[in-house]
Length: 481
Image 1 (tube, rainbow, N blue to C red):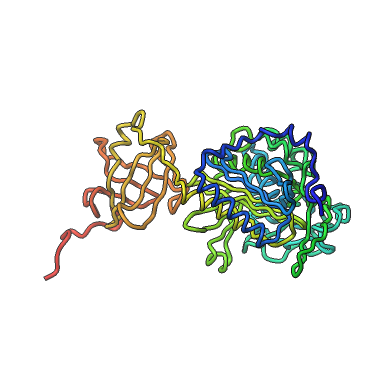
Image 2 (tube, rainbow, N blue to C red):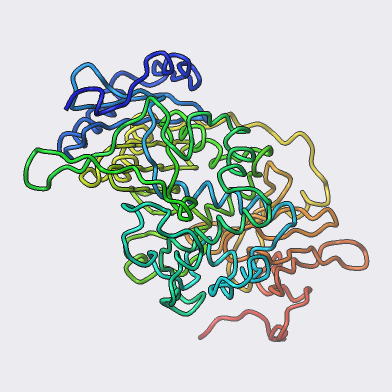
């Protein structure tokens, strides 16, 4: 093997892309950079990967890029393409959420409403996004990842005669054909090929110029490494045809760094912060083993609890390639790891470790506390302790103009609320997500109590002066002799 067969490298073209993703490596401490390099070096050596490229993103910017390769003096940089497999699904999900935000569809719509006669149309769009549509994991033989997409020219060829394996909506069962249907849905509603819609609506606005459906030099070649000997076999780079929305894309660590930043904070040119938050929110009932493992699935995004933090993103694999994109929103950190081998290194684990290394070595410095620019006196009046029965909670004003309610100490129900503009608030998360919060006032405009989804919160435990369903014992509080 030589450098040319490992990476199809065009020095002139690579130079043209240089600088599109600024890497400010000096922003990390030397000890942190060495720890990151050691992690990917260990993964590349122990996983026997022909090459591996990685990036760490902090605050929306690449702060470290590293690579290891089996060819001396020929390491991949942030502009070298690798195939990213199922990370493609997250791109497809973004296209579907855009259609929802435009009012073209509702996630609760059955697929049949917009794409009839597929044989799998009773599943809703949300269920397909979350892999709860009950569809088979794979298309009928032959193995779709290693054979030409021309063998499956129609949706019927992808779904087969019996597309379902489980009742719709009952369980999470990962389905590649499900994302083929979502790609077909995008084509039907946009009147354009999936690839064209993706380029126009996502890739170009986000500046992902090195993400494409087909490889563009410089790109890595895909390899299978023999499980019991240090020898390799080139893997075919098949065009997946109809299955493209499930795993076709090629990309770089530079482009995926930008994509990770978008998935963290959104971009109104593509998808709002609220919609990408929805993508990162669990949407599928987990299996028992997934509960134990701390994993879940949102709308086109995988979720895991690891090292005490919530990580979101997606993994990807196709013959010859492995990919992992991991984000810790709380730490404002993300990482991407790409390798050009069919199996070997656990790239998603490596990506999670890169996030952990930076988070532990250089914890995020919080923004300075600042007072609110203004406050509504009628809302400030509600701040402080409240009691639901005998359980003490506190209402606090939040910097975004909303409020939050949570226990004064210890564990308990916590939720943030968004102001509705009419003196009420709607729950954003936790137990009270979607529930209405309002202050109930007496005729003299003083506050009697808070009504939260019919729960009565009072300033004193079971305040006799407030409306407490069931009444208060007339003898009041007492001891026992």
